Image 1 (cartoon, rainbow, N blue to C red):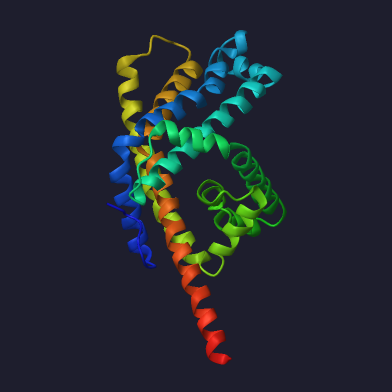
Image 2: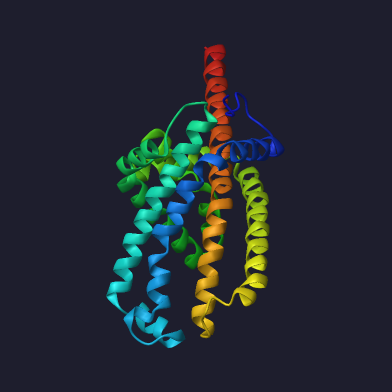
Length: 266
């Protein structure tokens, strides 16, 4: 049964739709989340072993100055973005009541990987410039460009078209979108903190077999990352998909009202 709404919703309605999509998808998307955790872990593992040299904080700093680390980082982040794209497509298909396997979602995301990567890079650059120059424009762009990935994945738009399309969707509803994202991110942080607390309590009991505090922290961080990715990332995707649906309905309704008004005026 489709979860996608047929009319615009209030803040509570959008959050409720995101929870419905999360509950409906978590049992089927967790393998993609686990894969995302695996492909995103090499940079941390590289730092953990000090890039093949000394261990501890000095080893990590030395490893970060090595070009090999940045190569590992870029490859890992690209693969992670690919799996995130597949996750979005899989959850979207569940939301509209369509059938799509994880494999087909990965194939579809691979086709869109280059524009998705470019859109994310452009978004990061725009937000960073906005934060560095005047701070407030950075926060404005952080919200208004948030749905650029949705437009790349769901509508096949190019990176610039997707980011400008996201801005057009959000603009006029910026404060409302910011409020929804704030509530959603607070929930995500609560879950993240709870997982971190549980790992922090259990880690000393488990011991991990290491004495170095930096390595110990890195292993704990990896465990937290895996658990959070499996539990939290599907909700993050569901929240942005629910927002995308709502804003598209509002945009279409506004366009229809404008056309009717123009006809009446004529």
